[in-house]
Length: 375
Image (cartoon, rainbow, N blue to C red; front, side, top):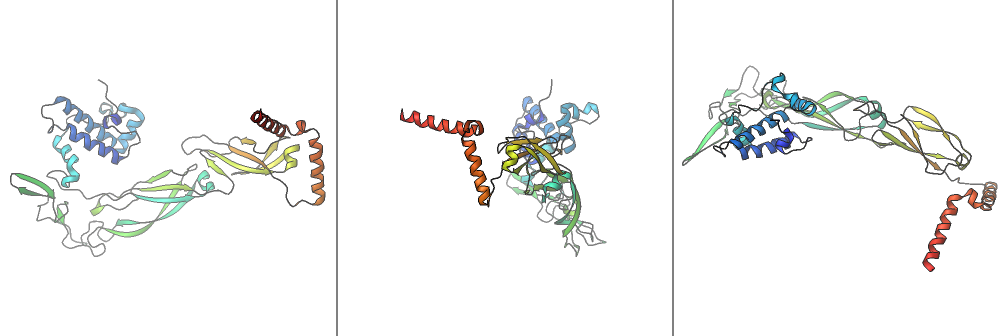
């Protein structure tokens, strides 16, 4: 029988975050867990299906393979190892209730990985289109160099916790009930530091500002994110560091407006150029190009320059540059210039339908509108 889509199994979208996947998994695991459904074979099968989907979708490499190739990309018979079948119900039950009881049942709580960080990077349009290198100064928690992140003074090490005897858990009894809780002495780690490092005061981490060189690929746009694995905050007691996410924002440009891979700009032209036609220079990100303007061009007309836009960061497609011509009304006219314009206007008015087709059509429509109102 063919397997169901893993995203469908968990009831999440294909763009779901790891947090959303974990939340959906906990809810379904509690619903179908064999301890809650004794003797129910259907519930047990659903439980195994949920666990298998969770294991695939919370592993970055397996999820990428599944998104690209489907079930074939994570098929254990194709060299990947099995998932799902033979589930250890005790372990999975610990996963579900780990947040409540402070870790897996009967096991030591692992030191927490470092937090992910976000850096907001503002780029000019030219930098975003052509790509660039940036140096970022990131304030964060880094591993202590003195104790190598262990938190213990050099030459010493952490000792087994005397309260929980290294398990990270203590048992509280109330009548017939026994409840496991995180050990208050060691915080669930099973070890305590009796002689802490003087540099980090036993934390294994210190505040530092590190400088990173980041390559920005050509074609990025506002909202794009660049992930730098392991460049987030250092983890506790030598645990893995989090990731750094560089969030891109493109500054407003004085000439161009970007929409996807296309660029837009407005180009002012003179009345004479618009009426008689000619050539004008228009800007592009690669320099100036000559644009031929046909005679009798009206204001607002669009001209498309193929391949003068932005090359996509995800493909080889290149957008266009769209130029909108705006006829500029002359200002600060001399008396002679005003006289010439009046003379031109008078000669055009004599045969308005020939020289001003839009104006004539507009006023004919206005006249008909008011005639209909009064009739």
